[in-house]
Length: 102
Image 1 (cartoon, rainbow, N blue to C red):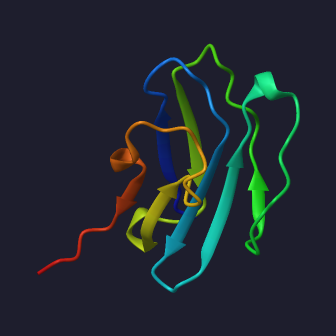
Image 2: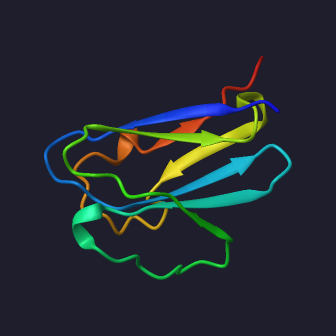
């Protein structure tokens, strides 16, 4: 099986829980929830997507690693906070979109 490693980096000092939507080339989507350990609870899934909850991202660590059981070539996009509810001063760095070959 091929895996894809995604490393998230917290920019700034405020830790936040994350909703991450991954869209694959075949149109399927996956929702990954990364709770923030200081919150001590998990928010409910507010979407119709099946959600996978990961272990919490502890505030002491500036990075968090996800491993997907899909190859990178099959990933169309990755979006952090697709609902735009998180307090974020720069939404420009919340997404990855596969570049199309011309």
